[in-house]
Image (cartoon, rainbow over all chains, first blue to last red; front, side, top):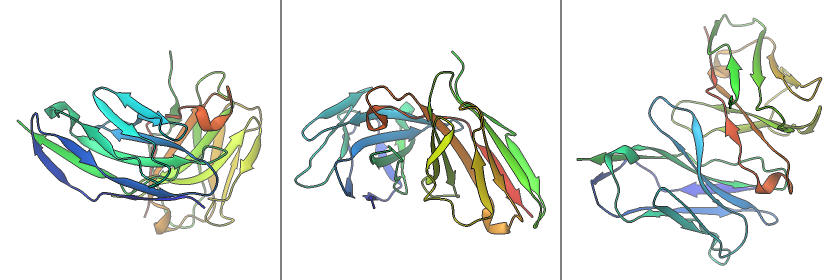
Length: 111
Length: 117
């Protein structure tokens, strides 16, 4: 079955710093790849997705590229804001799109 | 429009009791998923419904857990003889099926926090 290894947190950055959160996966078949975010006190919501190799998902200044050759889907943002403080989850989805979540990476952005 | 709703938001029960957790998906979404999230962990898949049928129940931990979706809309997750280890946040998500499930965003509800004393 699918599995995912995600960069452990917490990650603490100053505002406007560059962010990378690493994510690698193992999968049977050809999964779609997702990043979900959980802001404090809120439910899980989709941040971005990519459904085939070399696709780049992007949203709110965040980007991630589906790298089939390295089985990776690293999340990046050029300049983080305090409002980006949240827990980020990488998740491959299989044929039925059941999501296999990583342990989550807590991001804390300081002003 | 209305999102995914779950009731109750909190449930406290005693070990050995039976509980039911309800999920109302977004109208028109044929795919429905249940996950559970323990403290400090990512959500763990439990079961997937396509319409009324359970298309994948491989994540249910044992036969104390059962879920139904009789009319293809509302779903109920049922847990018999609850144990302390069942304490977690139970999340429901729904998605449309346009083009197949792997292309579609799952919309998550706020969850039901279950505490087994």
